[in-house]
Length: 241
Image (tube, rainbow, N blue to C red; front, side):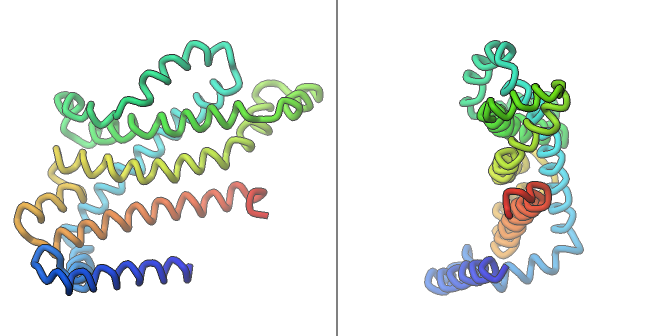
């Protein structure tokens, strides 16, 4: 925690020095942006933060619910994976953000934004879960089967715990990706959210407001990343012994 605070103060100091050196309106000091952020938390900016947070959380939960069971299943069921693998290899490398205009032709609301974010990160989680399930030692699986364990018990007591640390790693990576896609979706089509707030401030030349939105979006990403990291420490206790 002390190291993170030190890093945060270092970044603020670097920002402050840069603002003083450039001495332009477009780059205000951290204090100016933080004042706007603090005052806006109980007003308009607070509403935008809540909207963005809800979209990201919904996207991560949906992606987790879809990708993890499917990934673990494909990782252990080679016959089914042979059919799914070609489709995954073709679709996964495609930058899903290119579908944004087509998705927004159908819906402009939260559903479209959540769907787009989920579409991007679901493959990151699915591929990681599948590869983690594949790497489980065959001897461990055979030992469980020899003790009379069925498939459900095998997934519950072997596959799920073994893959969980890598799934959490995928979730941490996906949280950053989700924030990036959120920004694009809210700036291109939206009337609320941090992406909309930042773009609106930029177009109005309200530079402290714009930077306050950037800080808010950065803090949202930091909180999500930290929350996932802390959840992993609680769930995967054996990894941190």
